[in-house]
Length: 279
Image 1 (tube, rainbow, N blue to C red):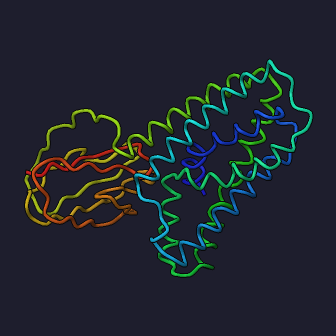
Image 2 (tube, rainbow, N blue to C red; image 1 turned 45 degrees about the vertical axis):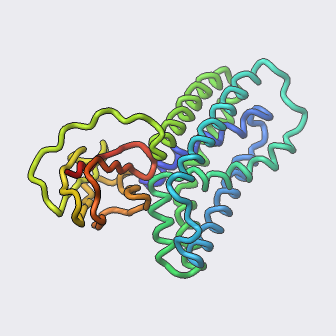
Image 3 (cartoon, rainbow, N blue to C red; image 1 turned 180 degrees about the vertical axis):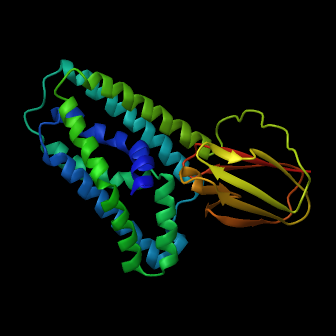
């Protein structure tokens, strides 16, 4: 509940701004419809994951593209909400009544680190009922924070503070776009620090709240290597995308022989990256 509230509210909460831009938040049921749509999509996804396993999970590149799309959508919602303070509100909110559950359902396409961990559990359950229960329980646990955020946005939409909320939402959208670009490897990386320490076939990396330590580790090229990921803190670094696959920590990743060069890995949300220098 705690980890999911922090990471998922940050990654997905901006979509709630879409409920404000139509009727200035006058309909209190919209937040409920949003949460209902979120529960339905996660439960269905859990059932599919439990039934079909990893076959139905999205590859990191597809998730990266969805993060970029979601970030742009949040920015559009925020700009519309800020501009609508100068326009007449629509006479009814029926369009938003239909849009709210769709926006809630769309949060499944904006994965946070804890969501990926829950999806891994649903996959390993091997049962559609168990997978649905895992994902539904996760949504129920994080619902209070989303409900609080949604009703706070309703109140803000009736005041001039909606402009401040719009600025925050734009910042969140830009952050989401950047996370997607980093997850997909579409941003130029800063020069990583020089690798230090002995070259070994077994490498240990610690996942912390602030990234991976050490940020650059040496490893021998041309031979199989074991990467031992350990957790120092709970957070989005608990899920790693490495060699094109998702790994939930703690875990040991066995890599086939690699050519000389640098292998990049990144957390499941695209926030933190690390490097392995093969030589």
